[in-house]
Length: 333
Image (tube, rainbow, N blue to C red; front, side, top):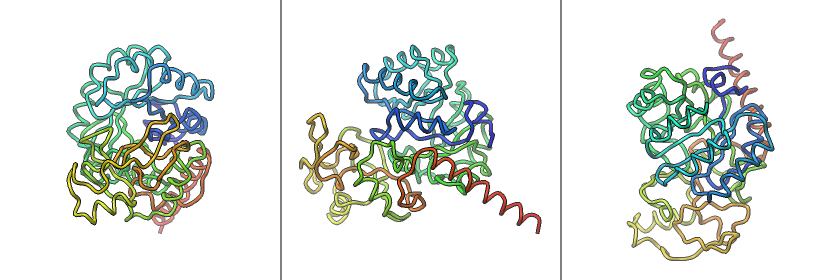
């Protein structure tokens, strides 16, 4: 399945694994790339030495293109320089302006991407000279930039720009891939479904809650899980922390139930308070259900089985081809 995005990135399928925070690993990114998609590393908060180490480990595991995602709410100059030194094929940015890094990256042949949430942003970054974009709809899990549904955002962007872009938010299976392509995107950017991949660094508790959730079980909040990253709206699965906050009348910061309670601990020994932006990883201990469980509205379409990245991608493409055959048969009639 070839699109403008697969040709640009030299990948087999128009599927990009979203940088799912602490759940990303070199093993996951490499397995996605080896399966024909584009794997991504989330390195925004990784220390400099570990940043280089994770990039090199990914390169040891795959000879296919992969990417690094950096959030521009934090200073990223050193990490960008490491990406250049290590010849990372793709660098994507969000929550800020990638212009200061654009020339240095492109001069080394690195493809540069920016996440956008409006058609105006998309046109702005196309004019700057970015290679491709990610259009993030309101349905997306994790930290969410915009407030427009993908079904409206994607064609609005497609009508304004010429460079390829991937759709994020609600597109997690074969039908979603076809929908995104028909709306004008050149691929899909998938986060929640890859949390259920075997190589994802997500705790079994987190994965079980994703498996049980339906399309109505997520909540969009402006400043709920804000400790660590404030003023960044997000979508999470409704858990005990969310329910207690809702039942208390959705009080503001400083008045939320059990606000200073320590509920979990990282492998390093660092404690995690309620309302922190940390997800439960495989090495997190404590009350994992009460942590930030980022997930998109597509969570109800994912199913309960933990699969390899290759199985996920193969399933999406097979679903898309099957649906395409159905559409062709309808047209014939």
